[in-house]
Amino acid sequence: MVDYKTPTVVALIPARAGSKRVPGKNIRPLKGHPLIAYTIAAATQSQVFSAVIVSTDSEEVAEIARYYNAEVPFLRPPEYSTDKSPDIEWIDYTLRRLSDMGRDFDCFSILRPTSPCRQPQTIQRAWQGFLAQADQVDSLRAVEKCQQHPGKMWVLKGSLMKPLLEQNTLATRPRYANELGNSQVNHNLQPP
Image 1 (cartoon, helix red, strand yellow):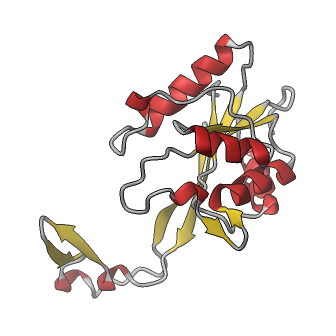
Image 2: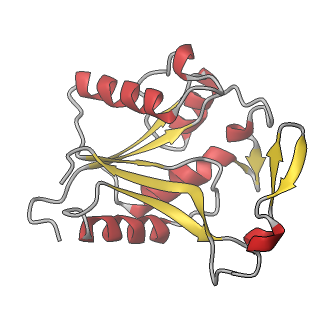
Image 3: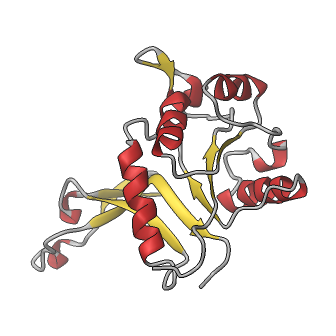
C-alpha cells in the first residue's frame, strides 16, 4: 500500500462528436438517457474521483454532460478530435489546461462512454486494486476473458479475412485468452 496521502484522481471521459461509424454515439439515447450519462453516473456514484470531466469538441455533448453533473471546463480543439488522434494528445491537452487553471491531480482514469454497463463498484474495485500496488505499477487496465478460443477468431488482412492462428498452432490450446477492454484505464501521474 502507498504510504503517502490518498492521491487525487480525475475521471476523464472522452466524447468527441465526430464518430464516423456511429454518428452522435456518445449522446444517442439508451433507455431514456444519452449513452454518456451512464458513465458520468457511474463515475460520480463511485465517489473515487475529485472531479468528473468530459473532454469533447462539441457544445451539444458539453451541454448534456453538464446536465448530468459532469464538468466541461473547455472544449477540445479540432486537432485533438479526429478519428486518427491518439488518446495521449487529448489527455495531455486536458491535463495541461486543468493545471493552468490551478487544478492538478495525482492520477487520472479514462472512462469511455461506450461502456454504459460499468458499475460504480467496478470503478471502486479497480481503484482499490490500483492503490494496493501503486508502489509497483503506474497504470491499470480493464481486461475481460475472450468469449471464444483464438482458433475461431479472424483478422482483416487488407480486404480479406484470415484466421488469427494458423491451423497447426491449434493443438496447443490455451486455457484462457484475454483481450483488452476499454471500460477503465487508470494512470499514475507520479510514477513509483
